[in-house]
Length: 214
Ligand SMILES: C[S@@+](CC[C@H](N)C(=O)[O-])C[C@H]1O[C@@H](n2cnc3c(N)ncnc32)[C@H](O)[C@@H]1O
Image 1 (cartoon, protein in one colour):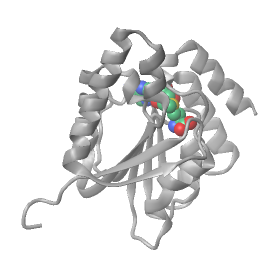
Image 2: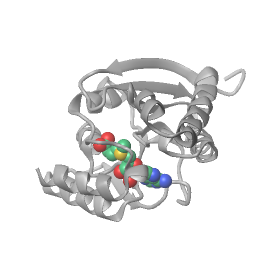
Image 3: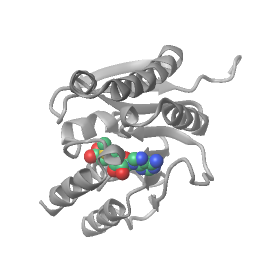
């Protein structure tokens, strides 16, 4: 319950950075975890915008020896709660599994790895189009060739904002959505709807192409 209360406090204080009304559901977490759920080799995974760990907890529980998970969250209080939550459930210290919790702006962090899988619940439509583009380009560049990037788009949310927000807000949302659609047209390979989330969400997945001839 404390997790929910702390999350809602950050929603109130930093709405345009947190960009959600409620932490993600376990159904959305399960959809994000699908690439880790089948028999596989070691994976290097990055989560950006972890909040206080609604998705991270589920992903961390699916890790196997040899896996490595990097988790980035900009908000210091949420990052603190996330660490406590994973520690409490014994998920941080397991043989052969490396989890690095990073309290930083994902655009400022210095990355020392490329990833098989990247997941994001970042609120892209709260961002200006130029920031959305910078983040999407960075995350695609951080993928290994053939690696996948899944991110969430909330259903109905943009329409509500466009209907009830001012013209400037509608323009900013449209700008961000057109950047998302541009990346989708080039790299999307899967999309699924998760109704049991607040708000209901679409999980979109992009793949970094293999080098030609690869
Ligand atoms: C919609 S919330 C999702 C939180 C959590 N992953 C969940 O699913 O419930 C988005 C999160 O992204 C974080 N965030 C926003 N901008 C960020 C940035 N530039 N770098 C890292 N995290 C960021 C916010 O602080 C917030 O916790």
